[in-house]
Length: 163
Image (cartoon, rainbow, N blue to C red):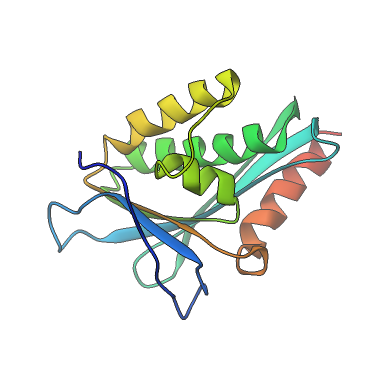
């Protein structure tokens, strides 16, 4: 796997402010599945959950995931959403994944821009990186919150259901 590299780009669809590839595609003909992820905690720490919306290359929704996580931090919930998305992609044999997240911290930690100092997050980071290595192509991009509403809605539903 190549070292993480940071690039800056603008996407018309997502108005991204940061785009980073973790590993290059071994095959340019791989169908890319996109997933928008979000995690949240009310109170930080507080009741928490995540949501993830998967779409195929044509933009058609193919899956939605959400889960209540109990009393956790926001960052724990964000990482849990990423891990759930990666586990889903690996278990459903999706080889190329493009992730959109409104968590700048998560994106910058996964891409190596920021170090992971928290022992709890380090464990989640290591798990995510191990799952990323199982994919042939992985890309993660930071998006503004307003471009992540579907995943945010699922995360909030999970938190509501956990009450």
